[in-house]
Length: 247
Image 1 (tube, rainbow, N blue to C red):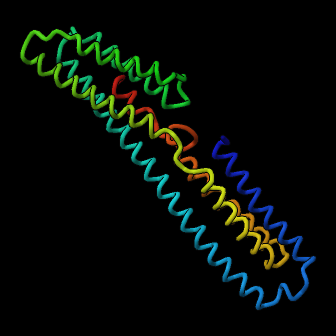
Image 2 (image 1 turned 90 degrees about the horizontal axis):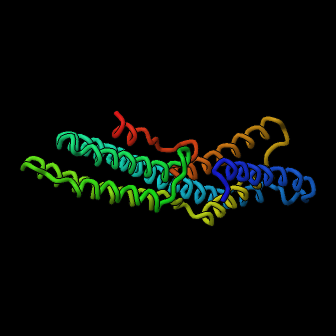
């Protein structure tokens, strides 16, 4: 699958090529095809297509932004729980040092699996580290009522973190359908074809169409970037989680 930047460049090429094709085709068209009545008919049709394209683009951006924000909030919530877990294990006493180390290793596994800029790690290896952290806390032998309560709290936090980890893993998969993007790009290409068909043949009009093509390509780029929150240029930072276990 192409990267969001490569896809945006393809969108720009497709939309602007449709504009140039319209400029060339206009020369060969009979004059009655460029009459005022024809222009009015094309404008009405293109208005409908423009409305549909704008609505779908807006919905896609809103959906991608909502998904991105949900993942970001999930990461922040996970960081807060990790910070709380570290404090609980610290209160437990020196005997929890092994469990704290296992938790740090589990966090390294999670970040290495989710964020491409870190060292890659398979889901199975990351899951094994998380299980080791849970077992390390489960193997703690509390000597006082306070330690029993702290162990119980630590296990509850680890269970919550496990659910959040799998939720993030599942949400890391892109959700925008390529077919939907193709349909929207086709609408945009038709729209820009109509622009080129009736636009005056001067540099100002051509520059305006270039800016428009760049804008719609940028919108597609933004949608695809937000749809992969753990990679690309607009990715969610792993710093909150790493800071929680390495203050």
